Image (tube, rainbow, N blue to C red; front, side):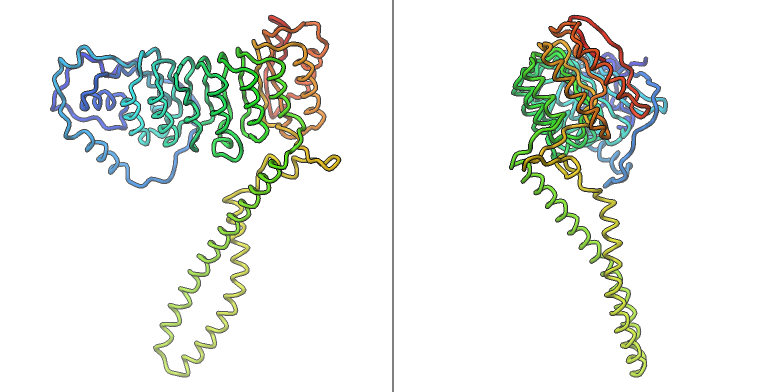
Length: 465
């Protein structure tokens, strides 16, 4: 590992200014230029990973202009004396690079405080590091810093945020999923999250809010979540069709809370509000689609009319008999124009369908059944991993879990639903026959398309895979 930005390094005003593309040198230099009361010590490491990230195509400025903008932010700053930096608070940052020497992840480990200004500075240059996909902070973050992290996530390509062990009094973790971003993996283990905090978080993951279609992994282990919090999670899972992994190990959830979660995974009745909301979403989808088709057709016809208009102006310069012939051709073109409008409508609809995709809704017709005049949703079949280990469950939850797994197995939907469940460390007897049945159903559910390695572990009370 290489270290950059030692607080005892000797800087002079003639030192060449590093570019923001050079993260390891730019951040220490910028902090010195701004005369901050902290100083980042950056350790560089390399992680050999497959390059699976993508880069945005839209940029308002050229890279050169953006570099100039960054430079102008600091060009008029006084650098101060070296003595000023001898006794500063050091902030340890590990900058993890991939095999292509591109910044991949930032780790802030065991810092007493992660300053807001430092996070703002990093956020300012994330556009120069499109391969930066992960942020890991385990200590020292306050609610203001979390706000800066949320802004950074929303304006970058970050897909993974790990804040395990970060306790924030205000509990404003919901900021991380309030705006649309690329965030797929969120780990908030040991963050002192209670039901009130969880309510705000789950409210941002309900369909059709933006992050309900993006976040796939949520780790909430070792917090203070009770049955009320489990109820909020169950309500979220009724509509969320993106979250595939949910870890609730080490909380305070009993059979009642577990039932609230598992009820969302099987058939449940729809309320009038559910039905109205679903129909409203479909109406809005069709309205937006029709508006886009209409706009696309108008743009196509506008281009065609411009071509016809230009040709007609050039024809007006000829003799009168020639103009009559041209007028006749224009009338013929007008008829062709009407036919083209129909063909343009077909082309526009195909383009809009490709852009918007099909209407997707948790309460769409293929997910519903009607029985005795009541509509039922077939349940969430996207969640495939659930951990309720080390809570307050009894054998009642084992029976409920078996019922859920058996129902999902018999429905044989795609995806199937739960394929990995952990209930280790709960107060239940190993001799419960439903435990063996659960293991058998999960084994049957494992397919080549969804390879999951499972092991049976019997700790304090039986469990599953």
